Image 1 (cartoon, rainbow, N blue to C red):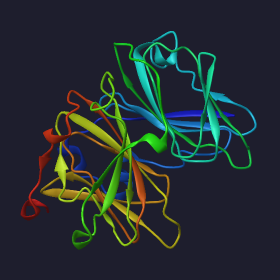
Image 2 (tube, rainbow, N blue to C red):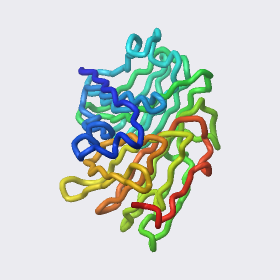
Image 3 (cartoon, rainbow, N blue to C red):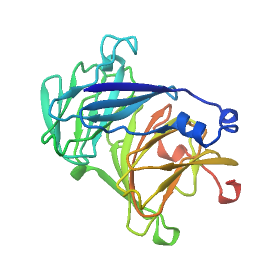
Image 4 (spheres, one colour):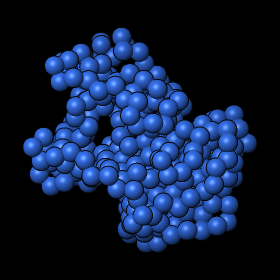
Length: 281
């Protein structure tokens, strides 16, 4: 088993104005998050979110972060969201085990000491996408089966953005300190997500793109200020960090899916600031 956590720092809009392609990818792109038997995490200074992949093989895996965070154990002052994008597995929280099939989610509240991930079949391992944000209040742990996820169809074929948003960790159905998390699936023949673009200065967001084939398909993520946009080409299961001042939208050469995770001061979706098409540059 290998454990890796890389740090990505916060940036002002003025910083990225001067970034070339390689530098932009270095600062905002997270690649190779899922490798069997390993834990691969990113610590971003944007609202101090930690995100990444836990892919247990023959042996269970546990995220152990203490000295790195100045705490006694990982979730002493943090909450955790999980979505399984791989084979069947389990999550064990302080001795209580729950099955996790593909697309099942879980919310783990502040203060849980041991969270252990396992795969049913090492040849078809579970892939746990995990997102952790700072928290001060203990809210109940909650399994979030995909079958029960709050589904919201949105978009239309005319604008090539027909999709379904599945809300897992969402203020409309459960309490959290600040974490929100969900899974969006584009319908066949659709390619745009979140267009027209928007920003929400009161919270940041990460996107994990998945469920498209390589090398025949590419997804392009757009970020930056509305009047000075940047883009990043992605492989399947790559993630992108979006600062709160940045637009965040994507387009693919075919349909795809993505997991979004947010944290910050505001948990209300209609606080976003929509950017008019004429203002995008």
